[in-house]
Structures are given as C-alpha cells and as structure tokens.
Image (cartoon, rainbow, N blue to C red):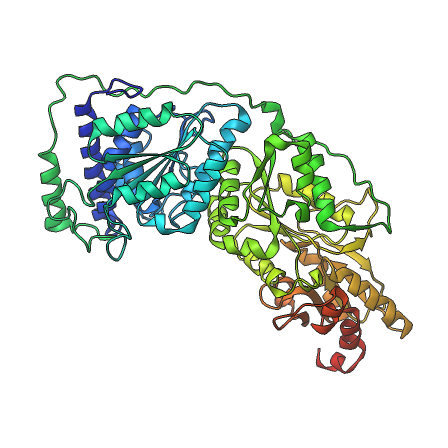
Length: 625
C-alpha cells in the first residue's frame, strides 16, 4: 500500500462496513432514501477519507482542508455516516435522516459545515469541484479537491463540460471518482460495467484515468496515491462496484434504487449479514487523519469591504451598460483580490475582457459551456472568492438548473447577463434574453438588478459584489445616455423617481432600456398637458414597495414597461408589490416571439416604445386601465 497513511486495510474494511450499516439504518428509519448506492461507494469513501485526504475533522470549513463534493447527492446517508465515523455527527442523529427538524436532508446542503455546495441535481458536483480546484490556485493553497460521481450521472453534458475545463486548466489538484455500479434509477446505465469504454471517454478529455476494483481497498488507496502524484492533468478513478454491496439480496440487482430496506425483516437481515463481515484488526491503530499543510496566501484583510473609485462619466455621455460593467469589474478587481471573473467566450461583448487584461490570473474562460461556467463559479464562491460570471442573458437560461442549485447553496455568486431583450436588434430572438428576469426572480433570496446607464451600472456592480447570495445584473447592448451624476447613490431594494409632481395622472415604472422610452413618453405627454411620474426600478428584486405603493395611490394607476416577456418580469414584480393595496397595474411587455430588426423598430413593434406608453395613457388605452 502506497497511500499517504499507513492505516491497516482491515481497519478500512471495518470502517466501510460500519458506513454501510449506518446508511441502511438511517434510510430504513426514514422510510426513504438510497441505501444501495451508499453500499456501492462505501469502500471508496473509506479509502479516500481515512487513507488519503488531509483535513481537520473538527474544522470542516477550514480553507486549506482537502475538499470533497458528493456529486451523486442521493448517497447523502453515506456522507453523513462518514462524518459520524469522524465524530462530528452523533450517530443518533443519523436516525433523524430526512426529518423536518434535521439538517441531515435527503440530499446534502450547506446547512451542514462539511458541505460546501448543495448537490443532488446530478452532473453538477463535478462542475463545482473544478471551481474549488481553481480556488486553491487563487489563494496559493495545496489542498486537493475530490468529487464522487455516479456512472448514471455521467450521461449529463455538464460532466463533460467540467471535464474539458479541468483539462484546459491542467487541474492536477482535482480527482474525480466514478462509482461504476452499473445501475441508474430505472435500469442499467449506458455502458454498464464496460470500464474500458468509460476510461476511453475520460482519456479523450485529457484526464489521467485509472480503472480499479471499487471494493479492493488496496487498489483504491494506491489509485488515490497515484492521483496525488500525477502532475499536469486531473485524474479520474473509475471504480467498478456492485450496487447494494455487502447485502446478499440487493447485490447487483435492479429495482432497489431509492428503495429503503423494510425495518421489519429486511433491515435486520441486512445488518446481520454486515455484522458478519467485520474482521479482526489485529490491534491496528485507529485512523489518524493527516492535517492540512496550512499553506495558503489568503490575506484576511481582504474581508473588509473595499472602497472603489466613483464612475467617471458625465451626464449625457453615451455608454452601453455592458461596457460600464466591464469598467466596474476592473475597479472591483483592483480593490479586492477575492473578485474573480468567468466568461463563456463572449468576453469581448460582455466587456469582461477588461478584467482579463488587468487580472489574467483571476480570469477563467469557460468557453461555450455555460453549465460548467456557473458551476465553476459556485465552487469558487463556496470557498471565499467573489465570482462574476458573464455571458449573454439568454445563454444563462441554459444553466437554469445550476442557478437553481446555487440558490439552494446560498453561495456568493454574481451573474451578469448582457444583450437583453429586443433592443439587441438584428441578431434576432435566439440571442434575446426575454425570460431571464423570470428565471432569476424565481430563485429564493436572489437579488436582481437592472441598471439603465453607466453610473447606475458601476454603482450596482459594486453593490452586487457585497450583496450576500446570488445576484443577477442585467445589462443592455445599445449605448444609452448617462442620467445620473457620479455621486448618485443606489441601494439594493431601491428605485429612482426621475419625473414627478402632484399633478401626475399615472406612474410609469421602467428599467434598463425602457427608462428612456418612459422619459420620452413623459416629454411627449407634457406637450399634451398631461403629467406622469417616471420611476427607474433598477432593483427588480427586492423592490421598493413603499415608493411604488405611494406612487400608485397618488396617481391612481401604474404602467410597467419592460424589454422582457410578460411572465415573471418587471410587471409581475410591481404587481406583486402593490396588489395588497388594490392598485391597478397595466403591463407593457413583449408578448410574442420577436424577429430581427433595428432596436428602435423592435421596441415599437412589440409594444414597449414611447409611442405605446403615450397611447396607453392618453389614447383609447387609458380607458381600459
């Protein structure tokens, strides 16, 4: 045995047996769960945690610990059993698995100190693990990152997006382990136990692939030692296992996925069989987990919120908000070394390339792989970085499931979506983000910010960096005039009343590009002797309820205008805010699939131009409000 410790194989065998027993007891008590997938991976994690990983079991959030991501999150009882074996979780707590007052949930979440990111939506854990491995480089640490996948989840495209990212960045501090037990949820996996075909795929992505018997502890320990010694590329350990290992009536049999053993009969029989598998440890010493090296360069002073230079625009200047975003990123990066940037091969359009020019070591190109990009950002955020991941807003919807899981993980992730709405012009509907506000607003506790000019973009980007949790910043392709002075202040949950008087007959609420349409409509209506209030709702979530309600009560009606589909966007945010006060809300939004054209043509054709606002208020539409 050539692992990093000299622990007895007999001790490892008995640990794996206890892990199986704990997993069976916990799932049987819960009446739900996945005991057989825990049994297949028990030897893998016993060898990993007790003969290879270097970490402090009493301080699982210590930043220089080796990291472990359970990508196959349905094996959560096995993870909990590991930490019971390590002494951090009381074994009696395992029997509260899946109960509403227990943090030992059906799939892992960061409510637990030994879980960095939520997993369970398969194919995502490996993406986060890539980000964690990148983070080690960021802070100058030699910790390693391990991700345990199932062979079923390896059908997910996100796994291979992550694989190519890990190869591109030569992450030799990353080790993936695939529990190849041959079964998915509903039947056999694509390749079953054809380990050589599986290995060929990983080798094709440039990984060092090792094929082992996943129940041979000596082979597992040697494989992890080989992974640790491999330089210049990541390693994957492909472990051939048997689902339900150790229990005669479940071993290698279908129909057991997500099916706990019945407490009366099946569980007792399984426990009895497992108890018979304990071996004499011959007086071997108990496992001693190697401590982490402690090597890292992270400066604790960086935890303080930094000051950044004020925007340098003059009122009336023309600048695209996407460009102002790139400028703001550079200012943030200069002030705070925790800020990193990722992009999906559109950095010259999102202007994140400016960050790359100044901080190449903190810029990560994900190429056209948005799932991997968001997952990498999750991993970075989970360990202290402040990642800004940028792409066209429409392409972020491709990573919707990862964004959802980022919300569950409550990580400090910042997303920037550019090229939003029909205002992008001739590129057509495939490039127009028209669903993104609905997606982001649906994530609990997410913050959604939508600036209209260069000053508000910079200010809101600075706010995003230190707003806890998931933040989405929506930027626009066309240049817009700077409305705000450089000293203007903004707050999350705020808005700006740009026009208003005691004579206002309606309130128009806009954001981003439609702010300018609302202002133009205000000027046009003034010629007709009509006065309206114009609000820039730059914080779409949370919203400034008090200002909206006051405006609605004073003017009698609110008209929202947004470069987004009607469902889930600005109009819905405003309507939800004022509904308890019975204030009518009329929504102008894109209500059909758009086509190519010039920005101004599209805004008018799809009902969100100044002309439509004027007609809604002054024309026949006013009577229908």
